[in-house]
Image (cartoon, rainbow, N blue to C red; front, side, top):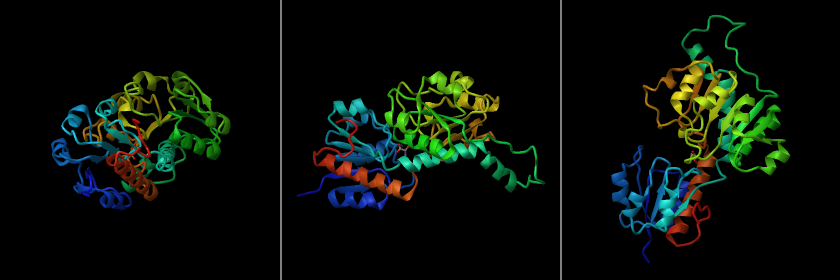
Length: 322
Ligand code: DGY
């Protein structure tokens, strides 16, 4: 019996690729940059499965050109790159990779929080640029962490893991804004479910862990930044378009907030002309929150399992649109 044809849009870790190759007739795009959409379309002709990354935009128009496609398995927990209603209407299953990147992502969010609060990257640049002349009693002053208030936007798995670090490690009070109450957070971390305005006004640190959708897109705009404390540190490891970047830039420039730590931008990568890149009080990383050995291997394994289940017409282990 011939194996089902699938297309994998990048070299993912062997932990997943081996499974895919064993079960499927797989073509793998091995270039460092994503395949252009025309190439994706061409490669997918006759394929039953697609293993995609967050860099691929999967919409109704693409799906209409792929009548044999049964499954899109996204190598990410987020799936805002996929038009889910369009996939569901066409009977295409969509899978994602939750759980395995929770701790790594929370670790990076906390890294950004502490780096931005204590001006770590700025201090590094200052040192390597030869500006360090003496110990400065009034220089490089950052924000304290111990006992402060963390505001979590999106108290899901990752939001909870971040809140846990802040509460158990740094004795912070946890506020969160989410459509749902998280009873574990309320009970174990003494977290308080609050409205958006209260969170903005009362938090010393704000960490974003929400999905990107029509409701959350652009939720951090100039109005939101103006409601934050001037000492606030803003961290985003979720998705760039949750933030109106020009408004964040203005808030950082005008001292409306103290600093920001970003693992995501809009677009990715940022345009090198973007004034945000010139600011001292921002730390920007190239979307690496899940970049640890076990997270990326786990994501590869789950993405392969979703793909294989989908081409076989079985239930996906992590199914976004059952
Ligand atoms: C995700 O999984 O959604 C991250 O953004 C990349 O790992």
